[in-house]
Length: 68
Image 1: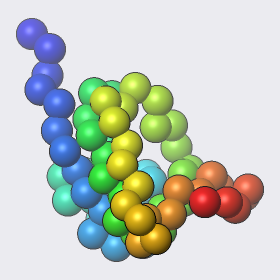
Image 2: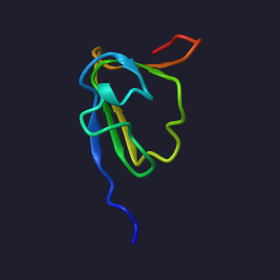
Image 3: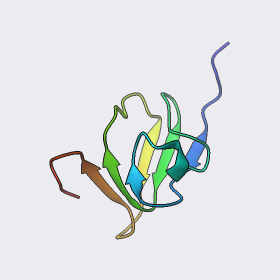
Image 4: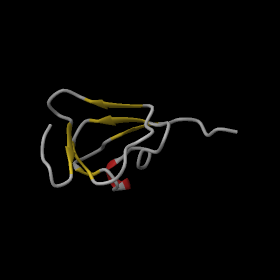
């Protein structure tokens, strides 16, 4: 049986791999990630069902590269 996908939303700024910034834990393959804060990508986000970066509040930044 395939696990059900989950929605998880950021609750604060931090790094992608930090479970403390996600409402339902670090997003895994098949999950939907909703980014409402500044998040530095320090781990793979491959396999997500979707990733939503909301307006000017959500920032998607690769570690060591900067950017929006």
